[in-house]
Length: 259
Image (cartoon, rainbow, N blue to C red; front, side):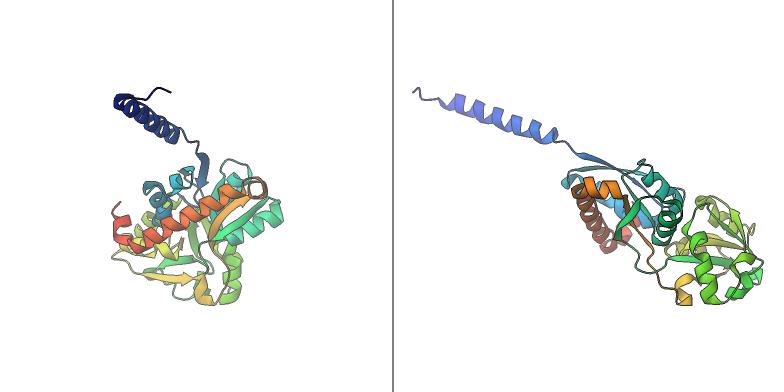
């Protein structure tokens, strides 16, 4: 056997390291498209944290986040395989599965309590839940607030059928309320600070579903029956990486607000 000189050994070692680096870069990542419930809001920060911090790539996932137009839209898009996973309301999912036979299930709960609420201008004269009868409420089409409103109305003791819903984009709701173009809007409680800031100096009255002792799960991560059956490992990795993003976002809210 010929003994290798130092130069040859070094060259082969460098070549081996280069091959390993190329192999690492060429590692195939599983593509995952996530659709949000409504646009891009603060409540979606942890998905982007998981992307920026590399938590998804650590889980061998290449995640793309797309804007949804309501929980119902997100459920339909996932059901049509236009997105692998979605962020949507549990109640809307139950209705979509039961009434429209969309084969989608929850794989993880994010909101353990109802996040839905209606916010009204105080100067509209609406001060208690029953005052919502006859009122106009702006909300995006296909939103969870509309779906679950009858449950809230029953618990709060008023007639949900007497409310007039006005279809409006989620991004336009704060402006409509601030400009006094509508007396009320549907909004998740997590969006309350932004809503109040933009409506100022007008004061708002909040009608949160949870305040009427309504108890049901809110939003969670969803996937189709088929995805859960055939890509269970991808779903597990996505949920685990998302939780890492949540922990990071919750621990550093100021950092996320500024990003």
